[in-house]
Image 1: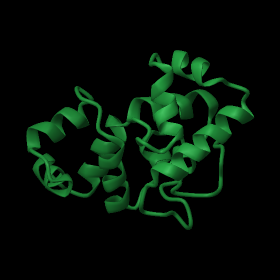
Image 2: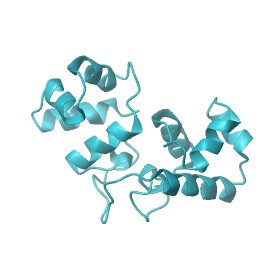
Image 3: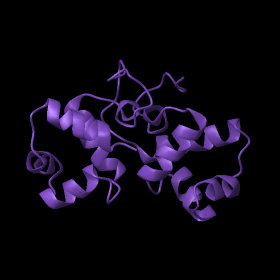
Length: 150
């Protein structure tokens, strides 16, 4: 999902896993689990790393070769993300129930995302973006265009 790019970025920057962990304010062992995808890194931590390295979620997920989008916002907003998820779902004529099934979760999880109660979890974000070629940065409100990547 993101481990190859995360390791590549860290090594290009000549940083250790401990230094990466310090950026996230977590233990080195926890960061190692994230980098090796033994544990999925939370979206908020990915955002911290994207901001630190001036790269996009789409680049980190290996969807695009462009490292950073022009006019990228550094913060995440649950409300904007939820609104964009709802708009995307309606554009594709996907019910909340169907999206929940695609993501192997339950309907209330999608409702909570769309109501801005929670930020989209990393594996769900990746799955949606990979399946429908929609930009993770767009869904999270970090950019306004492009909405879709090729």
